[in-house]
Image (cartoon, rainbow, N blue to C red; front, top):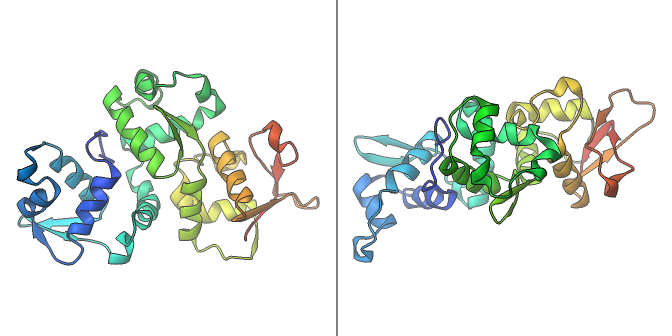
Length: 257
């Protein structure tokens, strides 16, 4: 799923439910499948292996002698939001996978992505060309589920509007950045970059792309961070210009409020 081709049955909710089932004790694969897809519902599917494999890929479960065990602390799956934060902290491990490459390409398109077809499935040929990997309509539909869940944008029908606020908040909280401390923007980026290269692939240019800029502005509007431009500071970064935020196109410092 994250290492290779994305598949639609492996949605976040199924992965989370599987993890909760084995939270207290290991169970056999057949026992878990029965709980996930009870026979009495007479709706047997071939989905099980897809979301089981996704959970294993993500390091959430381990499989040994057909016994499936939780591989992380129960705190990691206390809520589905906790699971999301864990996955966001692990995404760089999959930097050659389809999900990572498509997300990176989506963000590198900047605001031009808004000019494209609003049915994400129809963008498969474009992303196949950009990423150099095979991407089809099914993979793009699967990408849409996870991109929305992991906080890379807002889902609008079959389209994702780039806004990394949820993803950025997760990696900020995982980065060890101190609340109440003012950081230079470069210090801030350096702290989150081990988990955020997927959307900040070239920090040397000191420019935040459209989706990251949207995310940072949203976090500031929510009161989670405060961005400043201090005149005597040389560490200047550029946000993607927006008319509604005409006074914040450059920043030198970020504070976790």
